[in-house]
Structures are given as C-alpha cells and as structure tokens.
Length: 310
Ligand code: APR
Image (cartoon, rainbow, N blue to C red):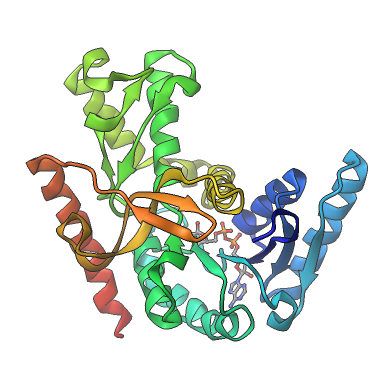
C-alpha cells in the first residue's frame, strides 16, 4: 500500500463518519471517499470539509460518493453506517436494525473493493464484526472492530483525572466486548510503568472500572445521542497504524480461533496492526479471574451472534 495513494472509504456520513473524515483529511492520511444512504448528507459534509481545508490551506482530498462503484478499489473501508444508541438503550438493542444495514452494504464492498481491510464501528460492535467476517468470507486479518482503543482511551482519561497526572503517562488496557461486560485489565494498566494497584486503593480502582463501562451511556445522557469525538479518534489511530505500517499494538475486536481459549467469536484483544491488517493476535497471560471475565464477555457476544441467525 503506497502511502500517498491510500484510498479510505467511510460508509456512513453521520457523526462518527464525518468526524473521522475530518481527522483523516486534515492529517492527509489518505484520500477520503464518504458515502451515505442519505446522499445529500454526504455531499453537504464533503463540501463543508473542502471549504474548511481551503480555509486552513490544507492539501487533503475528500470526495462524496453516490454509489459504491465510486469507492472501487478502496484499501480500507470504515463502516459507521447504522443507528446509534439513544438514552436508555444498550448497544445490543441495535442488533436487528444494524444487521440489515450491514447486510446490504457488505456485498457491494465485496464487489467493488474485494481486497479492502474493513474496520467495523457499527454497534453492537463485536457481534457485527463477526457478521462482517462471516458475510465477507475474507481472511480474518482484514476484518477488525473498533472497540478497545476507545475503551482503553476512556480508561486512560479516567485514571489521569483520578490520579491527577498527565494522560500521556497512562497506559491502560481494556479487553473483551464493547459493552457492559468489557474487561478493564487493571493488572496491565500502569502510570509511568507503575501498576495501578500500587497507586490506588482497590475501592477507587473498582469505581474507575465501573465508570469506564458506563462512559458511553454517561455521554449519551448529556448529548441525547452517542459519542463521536473519541470514537473517531480511536478509528483514526487504527488507520494510522495500518497505513503507516506501524506494527502498533492496540486492542481490536477480531475473530478468535482458539486464542484465549475462545473459538468462533469476535472479541477485543491486543493485536499488532500494520499494512496487512491484524498481523498478530497477542495472547496475554491472564489470571483465573480475568479468564473468567473474558469468557463471560464472550458468552454475551455469542448471545448476540445467535440472534444473527446465520
Ligand atoms: N448505507 C449507508 N449509510 C447508512 C445506511 C446504509 N444502508 N443506513 C444508515 N446510514 C447512515 C445514516 O444515514 C447516518 O448518516 O449512517 C449514518 C449514521 O450516523 P449517525 O446517526 O450520526 O450515527 P453515529 O453516531 O455516527 O454512529 C454510527 O457507530 O458508534 C457506532 O453505535 C454507533 O452504530 C452506530 C454507528
């Protein structure tokens, strides 16, 4: 993949998709193609973004598309199309509606961009990442869901605030499903290399892990719609890792085939991201309790997978 010619298709020009488009094009990470079922929305956002590039004197390129043929030969496709959560909803509540949307999109991606790496953002994330993997029938290296980068970022923000140190000193990791059974890995989370447990009491840590699990819902309670700045930042980090072949270790939802003793399910685990997508699944040594919680998380994703009826 040549750096300057990377073609990034963003399907869904809503809050997450358009904010991501802005991040990508301002960074000139690749050429962006924005597509939405609401064609006017994609066009309006792109025209506005082009004006913003001209105003800032930036050079990035962004296009609106009215048909999937225009996103032919994309290197990376980001799927943000679908309904977002509203107050009182769980991510799982979106399953049936968003399944239909994904089902209508994947055959077109397969037709026009059969070699693309696909990043799934639509919720319920792990279940739909599994669905995309099964529908697209491409190598599991090329399908990943954006979950853990966001949840780990949220955990970092909360730890930094609690301890009163710079966010840049925090290394936090959240595995498992993107939802209430996510697994903030306290043992592997550090402040400038110092394990969290040495700096915070068990009670404060428990409060933080509870907070990170409900951070998305907390934001919805204020916005009356779901978050998009942090989600788009998380996708942007994954895109950068792939496009720049960084071999960066990040948490993503991937199809597991025996790793972590889990099979035939998608779940957030640390992976190495580079030019070929998921270049390695990294297996951490988990203790008994962490393994139990990861299994529990997988069970919840499997409940959703059963509802896909595939
Ligand atoms: N094809 C293309 N675009 C579609 C389709 C489709 N079949 N169906 C819906 N869309 C578009 C909508 O027109 C809308 O512009 O998807 C966009 C979704 O944008 P928002 O409603 O603003 O939702 P957003 O907050 O961006 O979240 C998108 O990401 O984080 C997840 O839970 C979230 O599933 C949701 C997705």
